[in-house]
Every structure is written in C-alpha cells, then in structure tokens.
Length: 149
Image 1 (tube, rainbow, N blue to C red):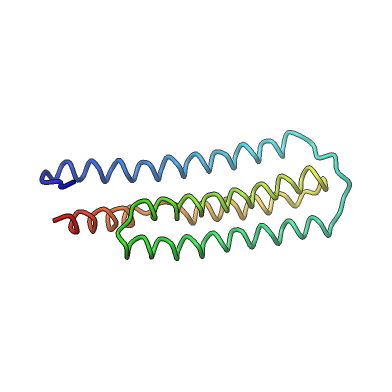
Image 2 (cartoon, helix red, strand yellow; image 1 turned 90 degrees about the horizontal axis):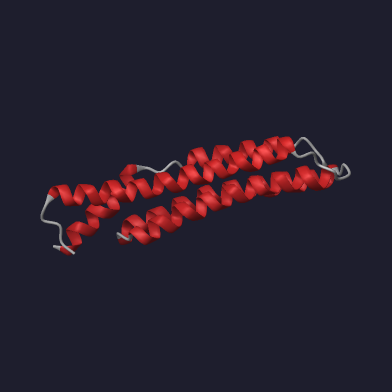
C-alpha cells in the first residue's frame, strides 16, 4: 500500500502511536488496580521472609529481562522495518513488568508482607522505562513506506 498523500501517512503514524499509548496506559492502570487490591484487601498468609525475598528477586529479574528483551526486539524491528515486531516488543515488555507486580500481589496475599510495595515500585519503574517512543514508530513506518516505493 503506497501513500502518496503526506496527510495519509501522518494519519497512519498518529494512529499507530496511539495504539502504543493506549496499551501503555491500560497496563499502567492495571498496576494501579493491583496495588489498590493489595492496599484494601488484607493479606492473610503467615510471614515468610525467604519466600518474600524470592518473590522480590523474581520481580527484579522480570523487570531487567523486560528492558533487555524489549531493547533487543525493538532493534530487530527497526532493522527489519516490521511494525508487528515493534508491537510485540512493547507488549512483551509491558507484560513482564506487569508480572513483577503480580508477584508483589502474590507476596502480599501469601506472606502478608509489606514488601509488596517494592515490587510494585519496580513494576512502575519498568513501565515508565517502557514509555512508547514516537521515534520508533516513525522509523518503522517511514522505512516501510520507503521500501514500498
């Protein structure tokens, strides 16, 4: 599909970027819902520091993995000029950060520990680091427009 009209190309760019923003906002809101669930519903588990530290370690690993995997996949998406690969890179990064928050929620309900706050902080940090960059969408779409000529 060729775009001869610059407005048409810009509209597609804006729509593609809005998809990334909507997904990012939805995932950030889900973190808020999980956090409010942890705050308002008391944990009934017995304290277990070892399990709490294990959950924290898993959360750290998930956030670091999300950053590394997304970086590698974004690089591949831009090299291959594939928007679908770019979307999957962002979605995978978002999902891994959300998994870190889920481990915090699990920690809250299983151990009753207050350490879940740190895991939620990690997840939010990861999500903020994954804020969609318009440059990635521009490069991916611009390159795909040029390759169609």
